[in-house]
Image (cartoon, rainbow, N blue to C red; front, side):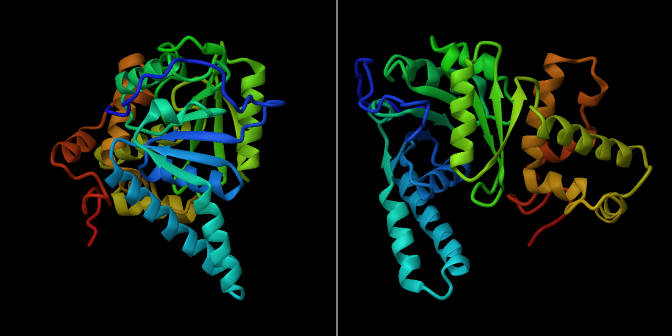
Length: 309
């Protein structure tokens, strides 16, 4: 990942975290998740630096944030358009963009990563920035499936490393899973909890186990639906209808797989299976493997279990 253009000596931040309060946030990754987190943090008065590999990606990220804010304003400031425009400008003033991660962490209370779900890439990123960031900076990953302990192992700040798993779309979803490892200090964990609350989110405390809470329950549920269908015990349409009308779920498991991305579901279940190959909950699905091999990932490609126009 070409985030690094300057070598800067590690030192002390000019914004030492006082009483564990996080004010300055550097977010690595300008995709949908990173931009969403940046929007929410900036909207709640935090100073945000959004970092990615190119200016083009970052311009697209900023445009996406502005578009999302306009949708918020339509609802919250319907009768006060001038106040709505002022809100948008105030939020955007809190967000700066950069392709230089090393320089961007110098004043960061929190460094939050939201890049590709690849352990080696995350380890390389954090290992490099560990040499450049101030000693007091908290590191956190937004990973949804990789062990925080494995990611943190690339750094020397095991006590100041945790997980902050947001949900998509970030501006709308209220939950944040705050993940502590066996070496995360209580001070760090409390800072991450309080930061989540300051964003207007509802945090839940999680251990560093596969999938934390939500995905640990959700992914095996989706996989069992696939196996149920593969055994001929129900059509995908009937299974989806049954779970929506019988369990009150907003989407059935096949619809949810298409929304999440079949490639993402396969990546998660393959990773868990590799670590715990005898766990039947982590067994693979031939149908899932076939669709992914055909490039049918769900809504983002126009076809998965269902077809989308």
